Length: 433
Length: 143
Ligand SMILES: [Zn+2]
Image (spheres, chains in turn cyan, orange):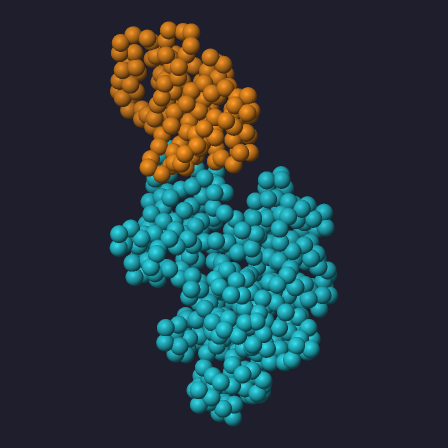
């Protein structure tokens, strides 16, 4: 169902008219209120008045994660603190966390976009939503929560963790929609199995999964194990949080970006040059309506492409393809670009292999080596050494065919690869460069 | 005429084999025979125990990947050439042996070999027909 029929089905000319009006306003506001933007635009010789068409956005400099870090904690806020009603922060695993703020109106906009997203994912006001995204500084939990309330659905604010209890609640409360990270969804399936329960006996109809890149084959795995229809949600705290873009249940082919609130662009990561529709590159977002924390041409480091073809669901907003990797997750192995998601898709194609893997990069002498650790579950286990060796060889061959890089495949015992309750640790890079 | 063997996947790292035996001992299961096939990074531990069901449950609960494999136990006379005569016979019938290992008996004179064939049914049929003594599972587990 389409939550906001008027805005989600606007003709392209109307979308562009709204975008241009809002773009001019946000650039003006950022220039006036945020010293960072004013300084950067002055250095680039750009004034807000130079934005006359949507293409003029390309004249504006990019904003990077480092810029946000340099302005830690509140330097990028465009309103005084008395107008800020909420603060979130991204995890600081790769450095200083980035801090974002919201006005009351921002929270309301976010709730609207999350209500649109949940609706596109199949939820209605009659549903019970089991929300296993973490509540806290992370935007996932509260983002889904406010959207579910806006939609009028019932939310179970379970958050992450205490997996066994989650499974009991799923059995007893009979929620119909699951929201969490895709790796946690698989973790829940395992926990149910360990406790002698089966998702087939639960009441789930749809699952809305995001906050980490996942693949088409992982979708099949989740749908099979959890007995629900899985769709992808996209967002990042710097741009807003979950609900920047959402896949529709009707097509399950790409995520509609809410273009009345954001302008997406795809650029060549090395040169910053704009790429045309259909080309794969780094996703860049401009927020059009955010008050407390406007971002202009924010480089997400996520790899995607844009598809302007009409969608069978009736929504007219452009679709981004599911994020296939991150520019900073990208491993360069002997000159070859490798994304963990590509390895994952190979593993899912090889029958019986569990979707639990880890990539370990080492440097032996001057040569980079990539070891793919794969868990041997009951499905893949054979009593004969040569069978397991041929499984190793098959995986290595498929990876070589797809990526052109030779890897060592190491079979490991189940559950030796650490499961996180949030984001999975997929890469261990031991190279000291 | 078959026997069930428990096969366990092991990573080639210190302490895993001990962990299996500890798990089985904890569940009061006796290991009757054991063979480890290993490569540089993983191994397959094959076990004949006195209680397959209990062993499988205990190992699974301890997080191991386990499967039950059908094997054949054949008595080998304790004379020079005892084993050779079986192998020559199997060869003459083109029966392929995937692997084999010895089962040690405490009291009897004759030894027992555990065989894994790619075609168990026809191997058992041929062996019995020829007069080799194939030992039943139930008998084997308590030997
Ligand atoms: Zn659609």
